[in-house]
Image 1: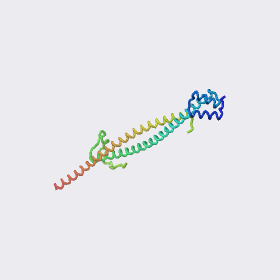
Image 2: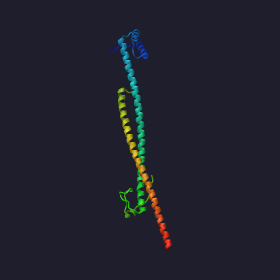
Image 3: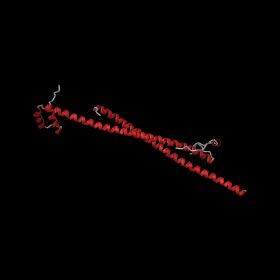
Image 4: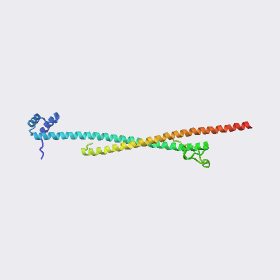
Length: 217
């Protein structure tokens, strides 16, 4: 059965502990005289007090780490949501560019009056019969135990690791989507330039035929 210390004994032990966590021989003798306890009782109390202090410090440190991890996971989730939105926007722009790309290819095929094969950089070609039916246009664009804290800490570490992996995958997918965007923009620009040149050549040809007819008359 544990012996309950008197209030004055506990106060004396606390004051001595605040001065030093470890007992010297002189301090033991003094505490024996002041408290009336034997050396074994005093040493046991000191050991218990040190263990309690270490546990409290460990719990506080673990709570601080868990708080930081929760904040980090929350921030990564927010960043991940932003990346997902940016990825959706990028894919939407990519789809619009793809639609525009197909329209430009069809328009170029009509203007140049040539058949573009599947192996051509311009993609699928159309027969002259199909070209008659193509319409040209453009598409617009807390008080927890250390054991509970350990479980929480382990769970937070896993969540943090998974969040970092998910974020890295989103970053990679977003970069690839942006690369495809750039390639489509470049190809669409080249198609527009070819259409402009082809239309200019067509108008020039019409003017030449008009002048030829004038001088022959």
